[in-house]
Length: 403
Image 1 (tube, rainbow, N blue to C red):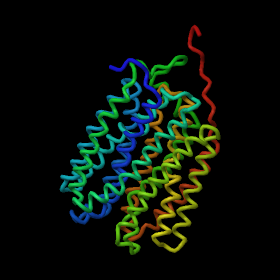
Image 2: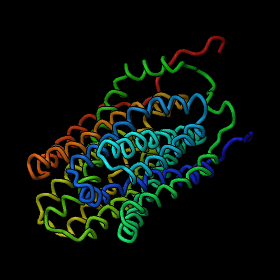
Image 3: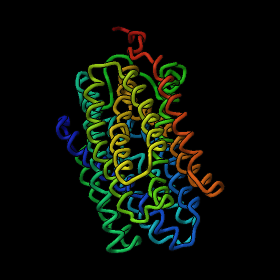
Image 4: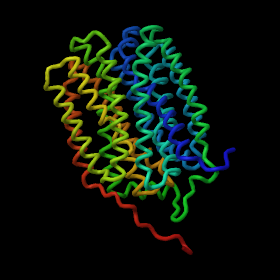
């Protein structure tokens, strides 16, 4: 068992690579939309529901997974998450019904994401990094996940083209096994999660957060983030095909550009968030997303306009993540950071569920994505306004007895 404290370098490298694989693999699931639905004769809503369920399960399980990580150590949670991730990919490949596919892509991978992505990894980052470097370190980790999205898009498209969608999923399951040694490298010393000073139970921490207006506003804004990014990630490829771009290259390049520019956007957000009010940065990001989406819909559609849209959205894609988690750590401390981040993230994933599912549902009934694009624009404006009143000051709590 590891006895000496983790170094920040180890956490950033191993945590970043873990998030790279976990986020990167799922980012390419939109490329499987048409091959799988055409092979099985399913509607787009069937595929969209499975990925919507994935996001919902990810969010619903995240507070509990985060609480377990805070209490028993992140590494145990991560190892279980990796096992579920591998199992979910195998079930996706073998499923012959929409229900079975949803159990793999939705339930198993959804819970696996809770144990292998930001909230749990950020719990380790928050405990290892000093307050002066915390948001920057979170930005580094988020940038690593963004690089995974850029890296895995061409990899997954290449696997689908050369091996077929089913074998591509088997290969991804093997790649997911590489997360095991990375998780083990993040094993914290016993008692690392215990902080000096004011101590709380899990129940006290939850009640304190839910009664706090800053937490409520942050949670509401994060809902919008999930709706926008998952709708675009899942439905951009079929949207382009409907508009006459039969060659999947346009969508593949667009999704890869989102991942590439996401690297710069998340790193910049982490760096700026260390020096500027994070609430203003969040408001700017949400409002900018609405402007970019509106511009994309109003301008003539072309491959170039799609790639410019993807690059701009990529810069704004997950840049909310280090800022949101940074505010939670700054206001509430790091003792229950994984759990509280998970609670806020649940709101994000409810938005993700609706973005993925409504995209398929409304398309099947209207024959177009216009309504959902409009919803995404309106929600971005709302989120920009919601984040402005947030206050980032640490809570003043009673001193421990005998202090």
